Image (cartoon, rainbow, N blue to C red; front, side, top):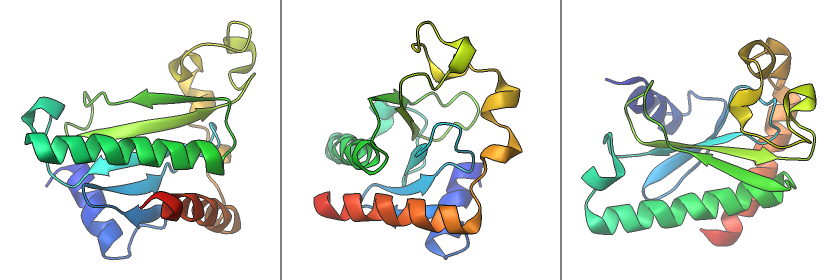
Length: 152
């Protein structure tokens, strides 16, 4: 079983503290690291490696739900801009990284506060100090769930 299939299974069994909500085509989880406050992952419930490998009807719904999730993330975490990534080079299972962005979030690594999240050195982006504590995680999940429930 791939890591994302495993994460989905554990989330649906109530064993993932970062799990927020199940949708028709995927699940919503907060990223374990929150340098970009509100960083969220939308994982496809079907194990597929490419968007074009999904059936047309499922693909349309998956994309619709991804937009809904991104809208909920943007609203819940009051960002200036959303970044969307669907790479699949590491985990070859369709999933979207949704990064809420605010001015200056790259610090000295940005170009006037602009640039992709990957300009940030990994030791800063993935620093353990960016992992929310239980209280903060509960608050973040509630904010995102409130927004998601407006649309689904």
